[in-house]
Length: 70
Image (cartoon, rainbow, N blue to C red; front, side, top):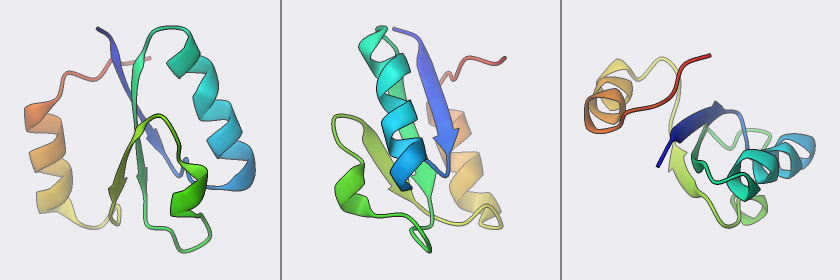
């Protein structure tokens, strides 16, 4: 299954937009620090709470997953 990583996908509009690739058969993961987003808006997809400055977390995430580019 194709995997997609969406940064900042826990906001009102972005959480709605995340549904499109999920409904198209992609395995979607949202990466968000929840500073302006809401955990409750991320439904049906995986959520990783973290900051873009957290390099070890990002390295761990990218080493375990095969996200599609583009």
